[in-house]
Image 1 (tube, rainbow, N blue to C red):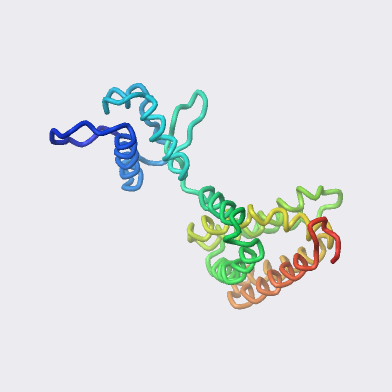
Image 2: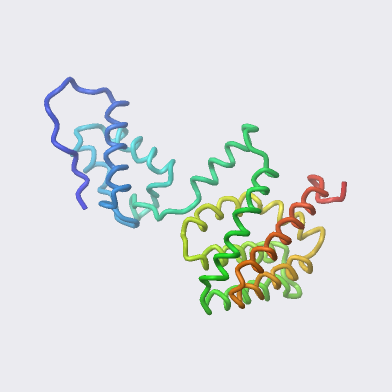
Length: 243
């Protein structure tokens, strides 16, 4: 896919900041329009610099801006490629908002209730046999004897991620992923203090409803699960001990 710039009328030479913005906007439009697709490789910096008649530092700044919003990724030996859509940029925004005091973790946790109850209901309607197998596998890992706390947290997160996938709507995966990642510490604290028994039981109730394709049953089971998790988290201090 060509990244060539559009033809322009003669006008005063813009400064480097303007050229950076111009290149960024042009490449952004190519990506958002689908003309550049996930995993497509951008031309090397030297080629883009020659094409746009700018220094490589201007091109590098433009690519950096695209990377900052999650549109491209650069890897050693692989060049710069168009990124696949995910929730990484949203997670960074949430982290920044938390650091700035605009958002609290408990508020983020509260957002899980309407989000994940809807996910559970839709997963019950749209799930496949493969989704059921994956949910069962996550349950086994969560309850496995000798499993590390890290493994238990991963299994817990995996269970919820599979439900989001089972909805058939990728928007739920994109929204849930950054919230899940920011709440890892909360999961570590609650599972470390209370163990996995209750989480496993709640998951089992959700799984049973999803298996029967009982949307309202799955919604209610998830509501109970999220409410219990929020209550447990509220009773712990930063060291994971009861207040």
